[in-house]
Structure formats: structure tokens, C-alpha cells
Length: 178
Image (cartoon, rainbow, N blue to C red):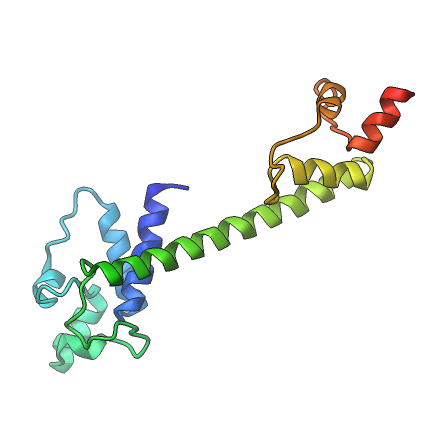
């Protein structure tokens, strides 16, 4: 997982926790990727040291309608303190956002692993490999969470190392015993 993906996910959940509009969170993530563009711009002047940096569309909306920045804060704000209070440097807030971010990323990884497992099972069956062997390979070679992760049995490895097909334990025994 890339450092940028984690940071963007963390920023999304932090922004949501504080009730910032999605467009502003997305804009912040885009601007923070650009090493040459300073984040100190018109948005940072409006945010009044709250950490909230509205996107240009929202800045124009505020200026056109002579609204305070607080008007952009959505009802999805979960921070118990009213805006502009609440601080990412507050360890309780930060720990909660880290927990949510990590849970989300773990869920994404599990979903990816599940999709990968289904793909490899389908691919193996299409090649004509026995279902028990395909499921064994996928389960033990790391596509599903398993206490025996990446632990193919030695017989399977010795049979499969040259042909790319790793039979399950029972089929390995049948091949060895003839």
C-alpha cells in the first residue's frame, strides 16, 4: 500500500469527521500531491487557522453569497465540538481517525484478496485443474486470510515447481503413489 493512498484515506476520514465538504477534501488531497504548488493560497486565508481549506468552488460560493466559512460545514460532522473547535492534534480525535482509516484499508485489502481468490479459482478451473487443488492453492498461497498463509506442502511444491500446478495434499499423495 502506498504512503499517498494511506494519507489520502486518512485525510478523507479526518475531513469527514470534522464535517468538511467532499469537494474540499478531494481538492486538498489533489493540492497536497503537487510538490510545486504551495498550500498557502486564498483558501488558507479563509480557513482562519482551523485546518479547513475550502476548494475554490466553495470559496467563490462564500464570497458571492457573503457567507461565513462555517456555513460549509456539513451535518455529517462527528467531532463533538462545534466548528471551528476540534483539532487533529487532539490525540483522542487523531486515534479515532487512525482507527477508522486502518479499518477501512483492512476492509479494502480483504475485498481485494477475495476478488483475487475468485479470479484465480475461476482461472484454475478454466485450465481444467481439479477444484480441490485450485482452492488449496488459493487458500495456502496467500489470496485468502489463513493461519497457514503461504504454506504449500512440500509434496505440492516439488510436483508443481516445474509445471506451475500445485496439487492439494490428497492429490499430491495420489501422484506420488502412482
